[in-house]
Image 1 (cartoon, one colour):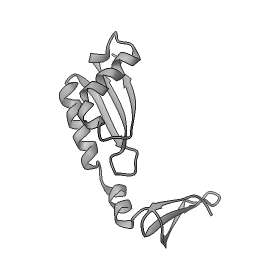
Image 2 (image 1 turned 180 degrees about the vertical axis):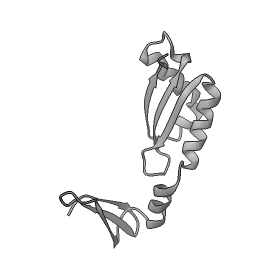
Image 3 (image 1 turned 45 degrees about the horizontal axis):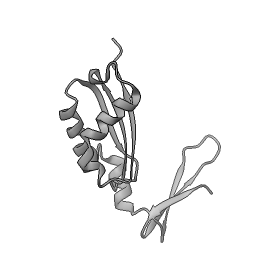
Image 4 (image 1 turned 120 degrees about the horizontal axis):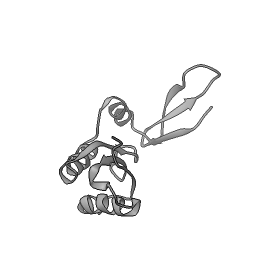
Length: 123
Protein backbone atom coordinates (compact mmCIF):
# COMPACT_ATOMS: atom_id res chain seq x y z
CA UNK A 1 0.00 0.00 0.00
CA UNK A 2 1.01 3.63 -0.27
CA UNK A 3 0.10 6.93 1.32
CA UNK A 4 -3.44 8.00 2.16
CA UNK A 5 -4.98 11.45 2.12
CA UNK A 6 -8.42 12.93 2.43
CA UNK A 7 -11.22 14.65 4.41
CA UNK A 8 -14.63 13.38 5.66
CA UNK A 9 -16.08 10.22 4.28
CA UNK A 10 -13.61 9.12 1.61
CA UNK A 11 -9.90 8.80 1.26
CA UNK A 12 -7.69 8.11 -1.65
CA UNK A 13 -5.07 5.48 -1.34
CA UNK A 14 -2.26 5.46 -3.86
CA UNK A 15 -0.63 2.14 -4.66
CA UNK A 16 2.58 2.16 -6.63
CA UNK A 17 3.53 -1.06 -8.38
CA UNK A 18 6.58 -1.52 -10.60
CA UNK A 19 6.15 0.28 -13.93
CA UNK A 20 2.38 0.56 -13.69
CA UNK A 21 0.44 3.77 -13.18
CA UNK A 22 -0.71 4.57 -9.63
CA UNK A 23 -3.93 2.85 -8.58
CA UNK A 24 -6.44 4.87 -6.60
CA UNK A 25 -8.67 2.97 -4.18
CA UNK A 26 -11.68 4.75 -2.69
CA UNK A 27 -12.53 3.69 0.82
CA UNK A 28 -15.15 5.09 3.20
CA UNK A 29 -14.14 7.02 6.31
CA UNK A 30 -11.36 9.24 5.04
CA UNK A 31 -10.27 12.79 4.55
CA UNK A 32 -10.87 13.96 0.93
CA UNK A 33 -14.46 14.01 -0.35
CA UNK A 34 -14.81 12.22 -3.67
CA UNK A 35 -16.67 15.07 -5.38
CA UNK A 36 -14.11 17.66 -4.30
CA UNK A 37 -11.29 15.43 -5.52
CA UNK A 38 -12.95 14.91 -8.91
CA UNK A 39 -13.68 18.62 -9.27
CA UNK A 40 -10.04 19.54 -8.60
CA UNK A 41 -8.82 16.84 -10.96
CA UNK A 42 -10.77 18.23 -13.92
CA UNK A 43 -11.13 21.94 -13.07
CA UNK A 44 -8.67 24.34 -14.63
CA UNK A 45 -8.58 26.77 -11.69
CA UNK A 46 -10.40 27.20 -8.39
CA UNK A 47 -12.36 30.36 -7.60
CA UNK A 48 -9.56 31.47 -5.26
CA UNK A 49 -6.88 30.86 -7.89
CA UNK A 50 -8.86 32.91 -10.40
CA UNK A 51 -9.34 35.76 -7.92
CA UNK A 52 -5.64 35.93 -6.96
CA UNK A 53 -4.62 35.68 -10.63
CA UNK A 54 -6.92 38.58 -11.57
CA UNK A 55 -5.54 40.79 -8.80
CA UNK A 56 -1.97 40.04 -9.85
CA UNK A 57 -2.80 40.81 -13.50
CA UNK A 58 -4.17 44.19 -12.41
CA UNK A 59 -1.23 44.99 -10.11
CA UNK A 60 1.43 43.71 -12.54
CA UNK A 61 0.19 44.72 -16.01
CA UNK A 62 3.61 44.04 -17.55
CA UNK A 63 3.69 40.44 -16.30
CA UNK A 64 4.52 37.94 -19.02
CA UNK A 65 3.55 34.91 -16.89
CA UNK A 66 1.36 34.44 -13.82
CA UNK A 67 0.58 31.04 -12.32
CA UNK A 68 -1.42 30.68 -9.12
CA UNK A 69 -1.90 27.25 -7.57
CA UNK A 70 -3.96 26.41 -4.50
CA UNK A 71 -1.66 24.02 -2.64
CA UNK A 72 -4.04 23.54 0.28
CA UNK A 73 -6.19 20.99 -1.53
CA UNK A 74 -8.66 23.55 -2.82
CA UNK A 75 -9.73 25.28 0.40
CA UNK A 76 -7.80 28.49 -0.34
CA UNK A 77 -5.61 28.45 2.76
CA UNK A 78 -2.26 28.29 0.94
CA UNK A 79 -1.15 29.31 -2.54
CA UNK A 80 1.93 29.03 -4.68
CA UNK A 81 2.47 32.02 -6.95
CA UNK A 82 4.87 32.18 -9.87
CA UNK A 83 5.08 35.53 -11.59
CA UNK A 84 7.41 36.87 -14.25
CA UNK A 85 7.33 40.63 -14.76
CA UNK A 86 9.39 43.59 -15.94
CA UNK A 87 8.26 45.39 -12.75
CA UNK A 88 10.78 43.23 -10.86
CA UNK A 89 13.74 44.40 -12.93
CA UNK A 90 16.65 45.72 -10.83
CA UNK A 91 14.90 44.75 -7.57
CA UNK A 92 16.22 42.25 -5.07
CA UNK A 93 14.20 39.08 -4.50
CA UNK A 94 12.97 40.31 -1.11
CA UNK A 95 11.71 43.52 -2.74
CA UNK A 96 9.96 41.53 -5.48
CA UNK A 97 8.23 39.38 -2.86
CA UNK A 98 7.22 42.48 -0.89
CA UNK A 99 5.58 43.82 -4.04
CA UNK A 100 3.53 40.64 -4.39
CA UNK A 101 2.63 40.67 -0.68
CA UNK A 102 1.51 44.30 -0.99
CA UNK A 103 -0.61 43.52 -4.05
CA UNK A 104 -2.36 40.71 -2.15
CA UNK A 105 -2.44 42.29 1.33
CA UNK A 106 -6.22 41.88 1.75
CA UNK A 107 -6.31 38.30 0.44
CA UNK A 108 -3.32 37.30 2.58
CA UNK A 109 -5.36 38.02 5.72
CA UNK A 110 -7.43 34.90 5.00
CA UNK A 111 -4.49 32.65 4.08
CA UNK A 112 -2.30 30.40 6.20
CA UNK A 113 0.65 30.47 3.83
CA UNK A 114 2.01 31.71 0.55
CA UNK A 115 4.91 30.54 -1.61
CA UNK A 116 6.18 33.21 -3.97
CA UNK A 117 8.50 32.72 -6.94
CA UNK A 118 9.34 35.86 -8.93
CA UNK A 119 11.49 36.48 -11.96
CA UNK A 120 12.26 39.01 -14.69
CA UNK A 121 11.58 37.96 -18.30
CA UNK A 122 14.65 36.98 -20.28
CA UNK A 123 14.80 38.74 -23.65
